[in-house]
Image (tube, rainbow, N blue to C red; front, side, top):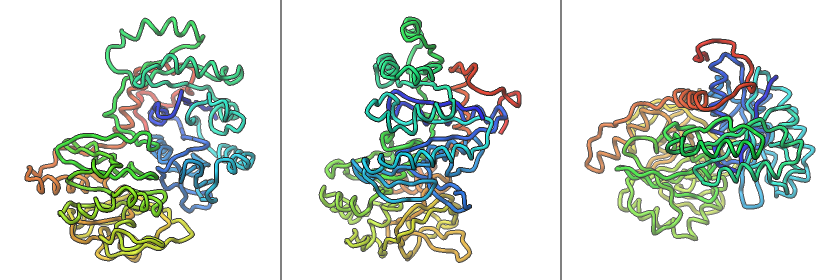
Length: 483
């Protein structure tokens, strides 16, 4: 089983995006390809099949990469998921199932146990090619002894490494050079090429620097990948949150433990729609829609909102008839109670917390009310500990009992369904309703943005701008458009 690994000079340099592109490129060549990330730190999670056939959690980036491969997400693709709950601690999810919350030092003390989970998952993969994603930077010398996800994994998989730097941040040559300089000889030998990512402008301006840089480091720059923010691949973590500006103004409260913010990604890409993330009460202002997103620690984030006066901002928005949407943890906050504390009392629901987390893909139909017409099909997933009885639901799930989900009260609504706005009809109906409230033409101007088309566009870009000679197995089809 051949492997190729993508590591970076730091977090947020585009590793996940490039891995998705490579997954799609290999799948189009007829290869059976799967993604793998040994350890992922992210509150963006997605459901994946567990060994017993049930549903567990992996990082959403690996689920997106599995989609690009044409594979069903499986927990072996991301055996360890760390979901931060504070600056020093995280919920630890192993093989899809939570094993509790740990401080960093306690987690590190059990490295041998985690390495066994990583190597066991990797051994169970069945593919022609594994696209392995690193985390952060391999040059964090204080972390090298306990590494599970970067060079330790590259050695275990006997994988060549592409090292990626982000030129859009500036200082890309220094970042690549410094990373290589801090690697020991054995780790440095794993690196088979360098990538310069997110280049804007005329490549001829960059060209004079490449040859002397290659001579200095003794490695080839295998590609300069143009910056294409229009090719939307789902983000891994909150470092990738970006605001946009549009005629329709949607304000999202950026909670300290915001989770699954990808719920708003497709909405932010609608023409004429701006999605901004705010943490200060005075910056929220008046918007067309106020969103309370998912939260990793809903009760703590509710206390944070009160400390910053954001609870009063939400109540004032409701009083002036601003539409409000709560997603997962946001639904809980909008209710009367969540756990042991009072909620915002804008929805007639209460939330109790169960020990067992509910993780499952779901589908359903929208109900009449709020800003959406009834009968629109939605597909998504649930990941939550909370149990909230639904009254006047937003969605009826397609389960044997037709279970209701969420709640509506006037212009306030909430749902547990992650992915509600990934559905083009739902998203465009919402945008049309918001436009009408602004006195604008209701026509939604955008076509559906197909996930596979985005993956193909990313693959096309990498195929055109990156020399992958000797790094991928021989193609099993010609023409490059299989799978």
